[in-house]
Image (tube, rainbow, N blue to C red; front, side, top):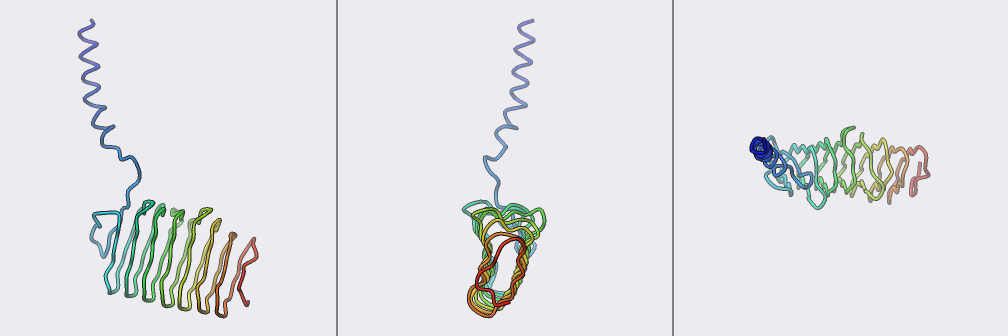
Length: 179
């Protein structure tokens, strides 16, 4: 009887041990650049137009679109830093995405849309250029940049920066908005 119990426990440990060892300690950054899987946590586009899609961006990791008119789609948690870089970029955080890190548009006129939420302490920003920022659930900080921008946001801190800016913010009073 004892021998059968020992065998059963040994067999169970052989099944359970690999499962426990294969589970990562934290979420990993998972991205593709122009359809190719990016092997590490720091993802870099090219100087030209890129399509970057990330299921997650881990805290401490970076995604940089570099130059060109990039499209960056973030479908999950963003704990690290995402920078679209120079060029007329489109950054889209889907409704399943939560920004707890930083998402930045970069220079030139960019379009940033967050359908998910911006967590307290997180930041989404435009930069130089006439940017359009559309934020559905802001509990963090949204900054438009240095030129004329349009900001549509629900809640949170909104600073339109310099330039002639049009803001529509529900729930909180924005700063540096002319209209």
